[in-house]
Image 1 (cartoon, one colour):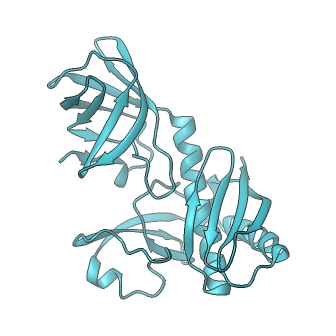
Image 2: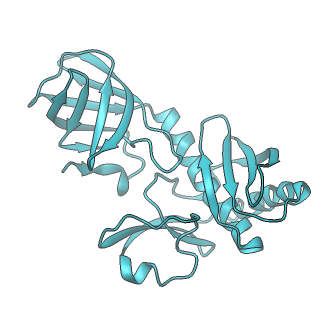
Image 3: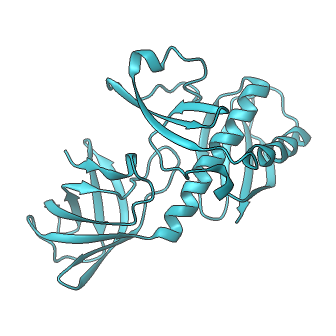
Length: 236
């Protein structure tokens, strides 16, 4: 199984790798990768693989049967090829900012209401979070976004640690996804935002909340019984 570099270093922009598998001339598996696969509401990374000066654009990254697969825009790579890999950093960094900000906003709403996340979709232009919240109050949603900005201004460090699954799941609010538990693996990756939030998570994040900018409330929706949705964007 490939070494997953982004788990310990979200700021890795370039790396070298060896092609270990090619399927249908366009689905590439590497011996190690920093490309994030589409997962958990965070879109996949994009970028290029370079071999002997030829550039192969990475148009999609997904995880299948435990392996991270990189879809390239044209054929030409073979098993055993050495490639230099470059991530579209502008896109990745915005998704890192979005992911960390979503933790802050969702944790704030969870602490205030007890609501869990029932869905989300991060993006470079706007973000969406769904909650299993019974009482809908549009004005409250605006207030939560404003209060999230105050938390971001505290310049909280974001840290990564690993913990035995059994111990991690004993911590209150370690999991904030409705009806979902982390993968059934012995060790969980834990993301902490200062003293404000700690939860099991596999995504990419910034080092400090000061890197995010300010959140702007866009709209909120009542999506039916027990399902509330809030949209926001980041002003960088």
